[in-house]
Image (cartoon, rainbow, N blue to C red; front, side, top):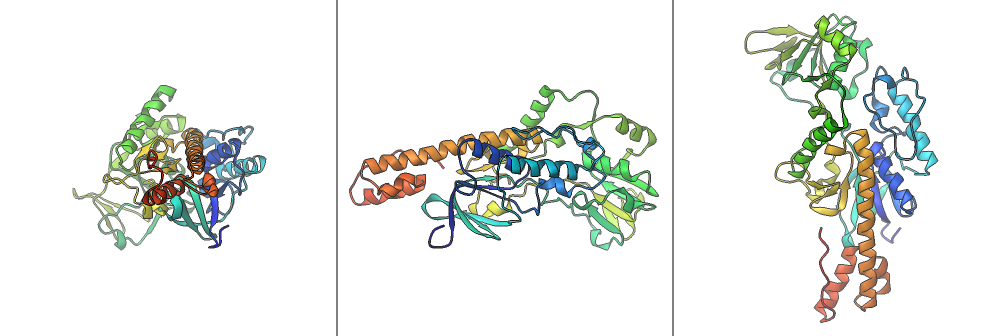
Length: 402
C-alpha cells in the first residue's frame, strides 16, 4: 500500500464466477501470488457466481452444458438438487483447493485512469492500483426490461427471470411469459401445470433445433457472436444464436399447446396485454424472460465503447486498451468459453507484464530511469523516457500499443 492508502497490485480480477475463477486459477498457475501479485474481487456474499441466485426449481439436472473449471472436475452431483447449491458448493471447494482467497462482498464502482499507467479500481473496500485488469462481471446484474406503452398502468405483478421465484407462486394465476430463449420456455413449462392460464409471446418466431449440438455447430454459433464483438457491437448471448434444443419435455409442451407462441403485444393495459388487431389477453402476472446485458458500467470512465455501442475485443483484450481484458463477455459467455477466455487473458496479461518489466530494466541499464523503474509499469517507464527526452537524454524507445 502506498502513502495515499491505495493498494498496488499487478492484476485485479473483478468477478468470481466461472470466468473470474478460471482467470484466477491461471494467474496462480503462472506463478503470481494471491493478495500479493493479484486480487480477486467479488460482490456476491458467498461463492457461486450468478448461480447462487438461480431459482430453486432449476435443478442441476436441468442445467444445459455446465463445464467444469480448469484443474478440478465437478462429478457425482445429484441432478435433483438445486443448481444454486451444487455449483455454489463446487465453487467454494474450488476456491479453497487452489487458495484463491477471493475478497467478498466487494462492490466495484468504477475503474479510472491512474498515475504511471496504472488503473484505479474504486470499490466499497478501498482502491487498488493495477497494471492490468481482468473484468469477469458477466450479465446477471443487468437484467433487460423492455419498455412498452401502458406498462406503468398494469395492476398485476411484473417479474424478470432475475427474480423468478419458481412455479409455486403462480398457482391459479394468469401468466404472460415474454421471451423466446431457454429461460422463457423453462418458465412456461414449470408454470403451466399450476397456473390458471399461460400465454407465450416473443418478438420473433422461436427456432427449435432437433438433433445433437455438435462441436462444429457450437463453433459456428460462437463465431457469429464473436463477429459482433469484433465490430464493436453489443454482444448477443451464445444461446441466442444456437436455437432451442428439443428434448422430450419440449416435445410434450409443444404437443399440449403450452409452447404455442403469439407475436409480441403492442401495449400493456391495466389488466393484461393487447395487440393492435383487437386481441386482448387478461393477466395477473407478466414475466419478462428477456435476457441480460453485459455488466460493464464500472468501465465507463475509461470510454472503451465503440460507436456501435459495444466494446471491441481482440481475443479477450479490449482493442482500445491492452491493459484490460473481458472474459465471460460475448463469445466467452458460455461456461466452456469462460474457461478458455480465462486462460487466454492470463497468457496475454503475463506477456504484457513481462514487456513492462523488460522495458523498465532496459531503461535502467541505459541510465534513462532510476532503478525502481525496473519494476514499474510500461507507462512508468515511458514517462521516465519522456522526462529524459525533454532534458536532451536518450532517444524515445518504440511505443507500446494501448
